[in-house]
Image: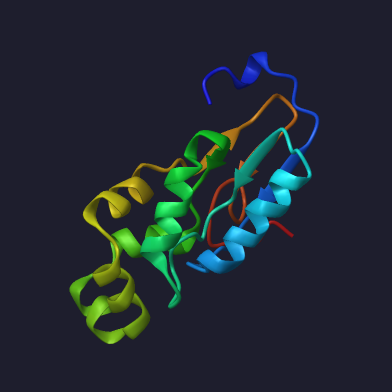
Length: 135
């Protein structure tokens, strides 16, 4: 959202750790729309999970103009997965098979962090490492 700085944001819905659960994401997005939120932020760990990675990606793409998205550690783990990791991890194998190259490239393009405004900073984990908890 390039013109975010020009917009007064009063309510933000933060979502995170979807883990390919498109069904939960559908319900959450419906609730967010009901509440008339100004901005949705997605804090990562989006498509890693055994439920529906492709459908989750497609739902997010259908709503991409309304959601600021950053990557989580498990998003990064998908596009960094080695052949051995894919072969030895049934969940990872399913995810890689289910997702298109375009979806994987989308994850690769997601930023590590994002400044929504001077007062609002988004990251997954901590400001320096997506594998370290902030608290």
